[in-house]
Image 1: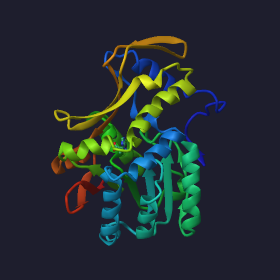
Image 2 (image 1 turned 45 degrees about the vertical axis):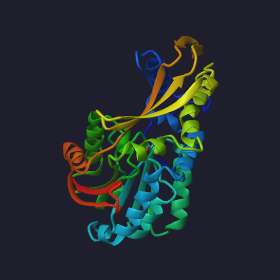
Image 3 (image 1 turned 90 degrees about the vertical axis):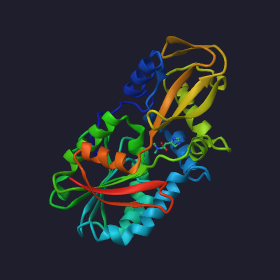
Image 4 (image 1 turned 30 degrees about the vertical axis):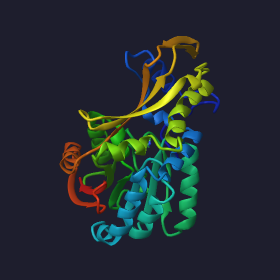
Length: 318
Ligand code: AVJ
């Protein structure tokens, strides 16, 4: 395990970045907490649940595309590459990609050590021919790859439309940082969700079973647990809306009544109808997606979608 972050000290101590993001975010005129804090253990489990929902098309669509284009992709990626995956290796996509490319090395990068170790262990067992090196780090920052992979061709893998969580400025910064981490001759395979009718988008983020609602509300439970919060979670409702001007789904937690609570000893009050903005999920048209990549220093060289053009996998070169 390569650890590129300072140790937290005891596991029971809250992440100082979580604390400051929450305290700062709850004091903004439009309260907002970054979406990355959804993913504690429970949040990661709930997200896995989301990916299996009938309404949540991105995961199964991306997997189907990956399966379909395996040989076309393999023809474009040099043999014996090092695959660097940004974000935790998910259950289905990573084995598909590794099975398809048979790379020399696989380096999953994730900030959550537990999840990372688990999935890296599973993958190492299933792919004995692949050198697996998990890297515990914040993938939004440039990272140093181990010397052992220095001479291998690099393929960055950033599936799931995770890039959609970022504002354009942050997305461009991230793409540039990935380019810096992977080097000049690298390739990047990135999944990007398309703009589509609200009738499809809204249910994907507000499902009938309420799994997405539980995922959103889990953030409040996490604040209560890790930051000494007294938030009355039952006073908040999950909201998903389409912001057409900014081409994004927004998730909010809306107070159904006036509430007052503490976090880390500080008092907050939220009026009935006010919200905490918890996530943006930007969607990109074909040209938007390619422009974003170019803005981040990458040249799109191939693009694959499903029959309905719901989701795109784009291969780009540095
Ligand atoms: C993991 C960020 C791609 O935006 O679709 C799913 C997260 N949030 N349902 C997305 C999410 C609510 C997901 N990403």
